[in-house]
Image (cartoon, rainbow, N blue to C red; front, side, top):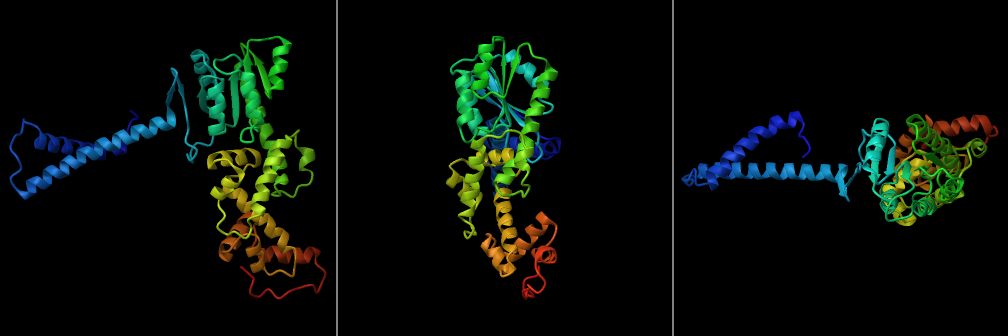
Length: 363
């Protein structure tokens, strides 16, 4: 059972004692006298309810902790981590390994810098990857139940997980095995016994590569105006371009649906909220909510360049039906209000005299 925080223990102790006394006093033969007055009935009832509430709280707390942290699978413990944990910002790695000694060693090497989830075989690794969308996968080549090369290939071909870097660990030193691993989609191939520093460096560089690719995918989504992003970025996967474009097109089609939410976007794209959040975060560096907002703000910038459109019209046509909120998020994103941005654009680009009365548009 997970330990209760010290400050909570101080509150729970008197409740526990009172509940125990009330429960025993009302239900055991050691204290056979039944309550005689209304106040005794009330006291016994309150104490009994307090006791059962305490037991319920402790059992519920234990169940939540177990569901988030530990799940028993075939003798191996699969650690799962809550996506909505605001404190935990470390990258999430999936370890696919059926040897407990290797798991312990990898956990010792990686747990300080990364969150870890553990799968016991190829099939479990594939299912877990689809569920939690890790930032990187480290897998043993030889495991039970499912061919690891086949699992790796399916992960790389699935729209939800195609972006995830994969490191293969193996004792097979022949060139044919290495080529098979790379052909299945592995990004790195380490020979056992591997050096801890080399493994950490490989992980670090693969995650850095994903960060460098984020500029490219933000440009594909229309969130960045840097036309040289594609030249600066490393080689990118066309499958990710298709996914980002697909999400952008869905949002574009719902600019006038002011109630369009992440849940609606998930339904249109065909993946869960958590999967979409982690996929977009990995590809573009922004959450699903912020992605929708950024696409709408990008549309607002495009519309603001037309002096014939009022700022009110720009707000509504880019998906914002609350003018105050539009002004607030616009200023937070670009450092100035829509009116100030348009004024700056007018001074830089618009011909003198091409002005419109915007007295009712300032924020």
